Image (tube, rainbow, N blue to C red; front, side, top):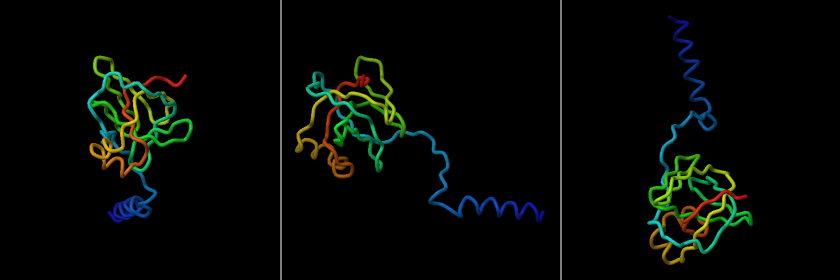
Length: 138
């Protein structure tokens, strides 16, 4: 009995001794990202780069180093490691964080972005960009 008690204390001490370095696996769950209704024909610009997860924000880093805040079509889902890009009438496309891709769409006017996505703009920074299309960056 005494041996079991000491084993319990030893094991419970391991989990709490270094809380800032102990990371248990987390289940993949939906993470909130900015979404808007899909806009047909919003492919005015195309930017190459990759998705990044920084400080609780899903951002897009262009090859030029610009931080872009992507606004995804509604029904797009992000789970912490991958995004399911939803484009109405097409099959959904999975995208991974750090995957090289090209996003097509248009930069949103600052006033519209602040009015509709103000919390994301203030928290995440970056240029708000509505994503209408995604393709591999080949």
